[in-house]
Amino acid sequence: METQFSRTERILGREFTQKLSNCSVAIFGIGGVGGYVMEALVRSGIGCIDIVDNDTVALSNLNRQIIATHSSVGKNKVDAAEKRAKDINPEIIVNKHNVFYLPDSEYAFDFQSFDYIVDAIDTVSAKLDLIEKAQEYGVPIISAMGCGNRFDPTKLVVTDIYNTEMDPLAKVMRKELKKRGVKKLKVVYSTEEPLKTVDFDESCCDAASLTQEMQSVKTRAKSVPGSTAFVPSAAGLIIASQVAFDLTEELRK
Image 1: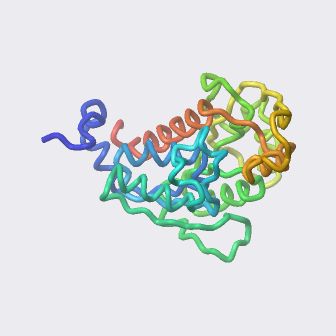
Image 2 (image 1 turned 90 degrees about the vertical axis):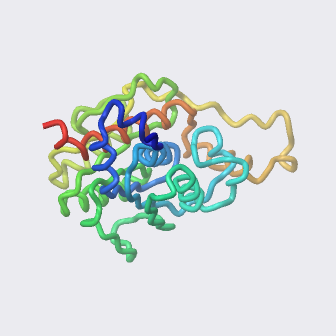
Image 3 (image 1 turned 30 degrees about the vertical axis):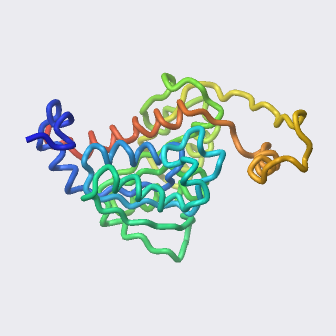
């Protein structure tokens, strides 16, 4: 009998989807990368996901974030993500956490309940703390490095953090993780040299006619990187494949 996972099972076997259906994955950050991680895992039959993000869907997210549509603009990302996940697989368990993960946060996560953790957040201090927590509790983790200001998804690779180069975020992470005694970390990063951003062009309109979103983009232009639909999505799909591969490793022994 055909099911929604039949095509996956034709090449990976029913044991693959059965194994994933009993696994729980926490995705920290449901943006350009994390949204595609969720998408692929849900479509592959993952049984439970915890999604962590305190942001709302913005107009500027439409160019790259799979949960972003005109109808979801202004909604909490975790709500939009849950709706999408349930539309794909009504049986999936979705635990929403509309919070911004920070070190020493009063918000408590049950790390021991996770079979795998995905770090798709941007803040360095939060990434470092999450990685340390994962290692403290013995939970596998994979971390996304910088995907902004890149255009070529074929430059993405899976490697250890200490093998990275060309990535400013990875450089900071290497230094800080070494200080903390973290000896290894699986990451997805781009070997593409970051592109230079183009200044915001307001020549076609005056300040009064700018939308609130456009003004926000202009204000944050110096600190917010550019992005495309290509690299974050590809990074998310690569991360999801690594998670699924690692969780089902025993099936290939």
